[in-house]
Image (cartoon, rainbow over all chains, first blue to last red):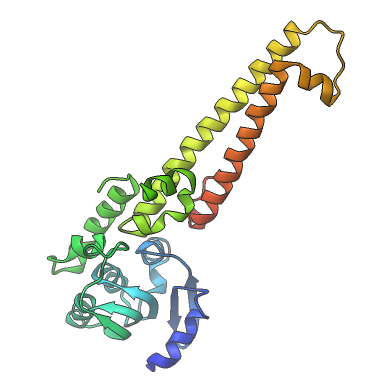
Length: 143
Length: 105
């Protein structure tokens, strides 16, 4: 896996999530947050199995989704250290352009809410309900 | 204060004020629903004004722009409809900012 080649898959920002299997692109999406990953996992989880997943930003929450989906490899433009450790601990190869110590929220005042929510969790299957609950809470406008 | 006015008048550009994109989308959906309710209220008010305007008209005036401008109820109804149009434009802009699967059908 050559990271410099994988960045081209995002087509200059046209996509934020690209999934490849056997060298062929099977899924492309554009979106912010965990939305694209969670949508793919809910709608077409079979696409993730054994796939190379390229995402622009991968935190521990998104990493948990890809682990549960059975991805074989994850590449990210920006990946948090927690995500990289989580992927490696669960046998998923990973690479990134930039590794960040922490994934911050959009205001830069603290951790991303999803990253914060799954920070202490050790199993990917424990992360999914927490991710869904956090998503519901954020969509409802509650802090 | 600046953030407040940004959320009030240009909610589609307030993304940076939220911790996560999902929180922003939730805010936009709520705002879209509110504007939709206000818009429906405008339609209702315009309808009532048009009916009242017709009821109180003496039947001697025509329907030219000058005649409508002389009828206060019709004039206010036009103003309310313009407001409804502006709300629609704001809603369209908000819905453009939402991911496709979250946009109201």
